[in-house]
Image (cartoon, rainbow, N blue to C red; front, side, top):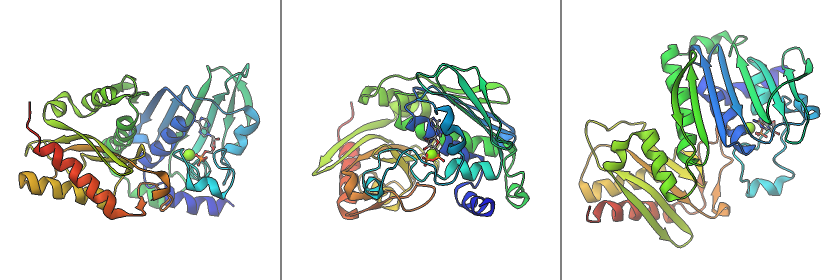
Amino acid sequence: EELISQIAAGEVVERPASVVRELVDNALDAGATQVTLRLLAGGVRLISVEDDGAGIPFEELPIALKRHATSKIGNLADLESVGTMGFRGEALAAINSIADCALLSRAAGQSSAYFLDGRTGELKPAARAAGTTVEVKELFFSVPARRKFLKTDATEQAHCVEAVRRHALARPDVGFAIWAEGRLVEQWRACGSDDAARTRRLGDVLGSDFIAQSIAVDYRAGSVRVSGRAGIPDAARARADQQFCYVNGRFVRDKVLTHAARSAYEDVLHGQRQPVYALYVEIDPARVDVNVHPTKIEVRFRDSREVHQAVRHAVENALAAPRA
Ligand code: ADP
Ligand code: MG
């Protein structure tokens, strides 16, 4: 059981940022409106994610750390239409097998919070407002081989921030704060959930010059909607990791999408660099598979040509439109 968990952990957890992604997924699944991340030593010494979501009833706290414990999927059919970020019920168990985990949670309507020490199993009452704090300490302490492959604290911290950034761009209705070594390094306030809120969040996260140097994307073809903003290429700003693609609110890395966007830039602007962009694809969930890889970053479209064309046209239309 321990070994299985550690193997699973190897798939899910490459570095501190993988833990951050899973914990923030869980906070958002729980309906949080505010998520606070705290890091020490790039996340290796401490990753703490605090939320104001639904919380975990105390009798479920020990279960939450067990393999295949998920409260999010009742049967196989649910897999088809899964709307939550996490649904494999493995993340916390995997993380708990390679780090010292602690849960502090108070379920809505419960009169007390409870603290669970994942190593000793000790469960005791504690104080906290409704919501959950997950603390992960000494990541990879039992997997020295993994620990050796980590980069500097600064680099690991940057990856952790990037993981939150990806969530933040999808959820302008949620506030995010990131503390590192006791200092506030990023703060993005909740600002609503409409298109204007999303534009505002894009400016907060990517910089206000991104808004000035980008064009709104808004396109619909059949059942596919593509929205967001396409950056105007600027050699000084071009960075390989500043292309954000979302499918039904989930951050993805997908060749179909990036190829479609690149084709549009080549057609309209004959540019060679990948400019900054954030594209949000909305599609019937039955037309996309999300359960292809433990990291959940990849998707498989039932009809990738349809999606490719939609994204390509969406970006082409935006880039070709006369600018105000
Ligand atoms: P999954 O997210 O795939 O269900 P996890 O291992 O990530 O599996 O989490 C296990 C369970 O613990 C979740 O299904 C959920 O019930 C509970 N849980 C974890 N984090 C939180 C949180 N921040 N708020 C509320 N419940 C949580
Ligand atoms: Mg999860």
